[in-house]
Figure (cartoon, rainbow, N blue to C red):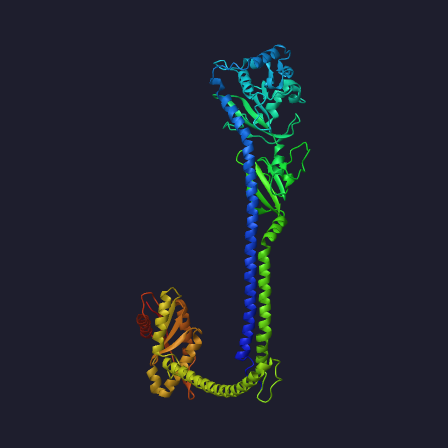
Length: 626
């Protein structure tokens, strides 16, 4: 006989230990991997935070440099807006004489201060391109736009630039009749390809952003503004302008502005401490102001951010939402200035971050590798020394039979006496278990037989308790239990319920004329015919003597009447036969439908009243209750 302990406790224990060892190893590896991953992410976050800090520091430094332009325009705007309320400004007498001489010598109503080129640079103060009509513009106290221009040039002078990247400071009049600019520059350089001063001034207000953005319709709040970048027609390179409208009370006078050379931005980019990645400065108009890659050096047009980064939005607010995200295998790091609304954009390659994290995280990785190798070696030793021999012993015991044992397993020598003793113990235990299993099987068979007998007896008792022994119909007790349950169901909203109260007419005569055996046979055959006349869901109950009740669930009074007629006809049309004698039988039937106010007794009482009327009106008929 083959061993019944094919899965002995020892065998199962060794298997469980193997599973536990594998699960433990997997859990350890998972913990190590999770620890490494968390540490890696933390180190990566440190690298990204460091890069963000550098971008932020550059943005702060850039804002500090641009404050010079902001301060210059703010001072000019304060002076210009309040100039009309000052005592008339005498200005530099030499500059005023130069303007008067230029206007007197003009034949076409246009004048410039090109004559100042003969003076030393420190005495030139500035250049004016204007029309002679400028003299007619003034206020009630005598201050004119020309007076404002002279005062501005007198204040600025030649050496007033506070930063090397501030190229020109100037004042445009809203009447398109004058430009005052410092430092002095030849009119030929300023006019460029324009046909004279008049055309230049008109075009400035039509096409120059610094003039158009100062107009009341474009700038009703009268705020300082930064223009889009442009290439200077005078050859100064890429620049932007910072301007502010000038108002005398509610009258728009013009705009004061400063031109900022953007060449200094390249130096800012070159001084950025992180040499990896691409560093770009862009403005709120989606223009690239500076690019550390120098891909746009020497171009005549201002590059758009969309052409540099085609997969990214070009507007500052849209880009700001991408700060710290992955874009095309790069980390996108941003910082935004408030005024001007420029962006410092740093595209740091992910492989650079990975290399830095790997260099910083190498000691932790090496430690994790040592731990993994150590755990693997420990598991291998445990497997070879303990688990594997134990499993061999378990297999040996599992395949040992009562007659023959398999070859001794390959186990360490010190294990062999223990293995032999264990086998003998398992053989004896197996014999006892076999005897116990046989006894249990015999007991289970006996219990099953007794249980079946008990179930059969219980079913017979239940049937005897609910049925009439003579007719086989359900008895009066079962009827009232059934009516009680169905009445509750109907009250909860179920379909209608009806009953038929049936009485065999002149049944006493049948007993008297044919004998009680014939009467009993009639009752039994009546039950059979009644069951055949009603539905399978309906039930026939003996109410007492020759009275029966047909219970009709989910049946209205109309359906109950149809069933009653069918039952009456099945009884009346075919005589009952007993011992060769034909016995005519008829039945009177009272019909009642359950009402919400009914109980079992009131329902049967109404059916009984209908039955009584059926008998009073001639028997062998069906009558509905009131």
